[in-house]
Length: 417
Image (cartoon, rainbow, N blue to C red; front, side, top):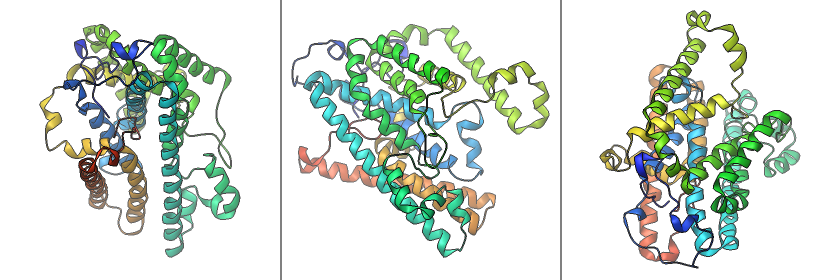
């Protein structure tokens, strides 16, 4: 991932689209000047890595660290952070490629990345099945197969494998990659329009989101049900991230710097926090007006409920207001592990899924106390961080070996390698 230029008034991570990116004609293979803008945008890496940690912890049984994740204090969770940054960084990396190299070359690069993510998904699916099947057989506990959603695979492996390759069958916790594969697959035409008429592209995205709710659009899953993350709805967050990257953030700078926006964001976050408290503290439930309950429930994660989207926007507005690009803490060694995880998100995401089930097994078979919960959670975070450091080390070694040894494609969330 490559960095972005800082925008006025602290726009979301800065507008990554320069005037050259926003212009329709472009000189082929224009030279890239070395400047401060060529450095990585560490805030994107930081929050992408943080999202990976939170996803891992949320996939474990409820424990001490689970109460520290954002899903317990509002409507949105780490998934919104991850998808937004995915759209943001993908638009920057491939938008620049589309301007400099043309639509065909940029589309080919995007589809190459889609294939890489698809292969990673199939590989993760295979390893995950083997892990669950081994544990279920070794400990004579078929409940693992049922709880992890692979019982249909064990009954009809031939049919289920085909459905898995079509992204229709997925075990528990394996829903994010299929969503990202679909979003990236349709990125070329989205990006083509975004570079010419960014506001029109966002408007069409909002229209599709509205149509999803009105006409109940969805993708079916196997053997029953629908996708846990409906691409027709979640594309809005992805496209919104791309829109911010290609100049939208700069145009919103005045709004984001307004004290009114800050006050509204804080008020909404506090209201969302109170609502979530009523889920865990029954004594507070009578304080919720019945009309509001009837209006807001259920808060649909599958179709990206507007309350979840608004909650993410409020969090983002406050974060942008107070966390500047030049914040010294971004270079702190204490944040280095989470930033490295964000820089190698595809590998770390896959590792996190594997570790989440391993942690689930340990807590179920060995001990489930608070101390063990803490040890399992922190051990997973440490292993993910260690793997990210290893990937980073190898990347530096490969880069020294020559430019061909280092990949220039985007990682899972769209940043250049």
